[in-house]
Length: 340
Figure 1 (cartoon, helix red, strand yellow):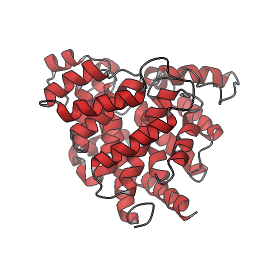
Figure 2 (tube, rainbow, N blue to C red):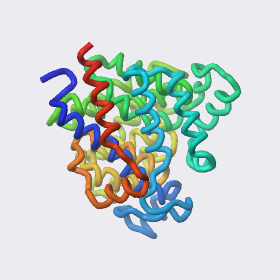
Figure 3 (cartoon, rainbow, N blue to C red):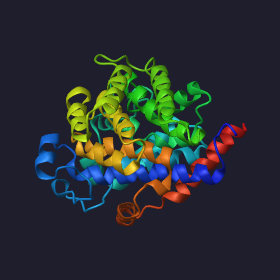
């Protein structure tokens, strides 16, 4: 098997599944972002259907910045031939913010918002992300995982860092983004591999990335990742899992909580994208981002056909998404990297 993993048809299918999972999880969790698990349990039980974002003024099936910034990063990578460049990522990010207008202000995270203020003032993008500890880098990083193989983890982490430096250049944010990208890349590289193997690659990438950027002042992401996977494997049932996920891991916008939570949902769901999304959305907190990361990783593992056609079709239609060509371009870039 080639280092890129599998044939082109399989790579396209799983890359498409990854992007589709990002969008589906995002739309599923959107209406309950900021809700507590207790409120979700009382009013909805679990979030297992697309709902209108009444609290956010968004229609049923609408995606947020999780999906839009993922596609933004895919476009930036395409422009540079799959070799990330911070200046190009910044230009695409600013263009997305300008095009989205007030809608961007309503959904954009605190670390990215702070960096944007500095960037617009002319600051060096390699200095503007030194305090970014949230999950904004991890939520959009899936295209890096599609493009960059896992054979050289240092190269993967380099690519992740180049897309994160302007907004999330802290050890925990980098480690979180590297973990997500590594699961995606490993899934494309190793068809049929055990899920534990993908998680092990994610752990190794997170360990490398966690040595870079501004050091963490609090809990380390690697320890949180291990604790989250343990919760996923030992919970008595899904309700026990959700309770322990909130109490022992957390689902806030902090990368050290939401990325491990997403990996836990991936493991608990055994890489079923819909179930991973349902678990992520039902936990509350930064529900759209946790569900989006979890379902994106699961889609990379399981492929497009594992996603439910009806809700995915609605999300695609409501947001006018055309994900197949994006996946195709990213796979071409992966093949180019493998060939060189």
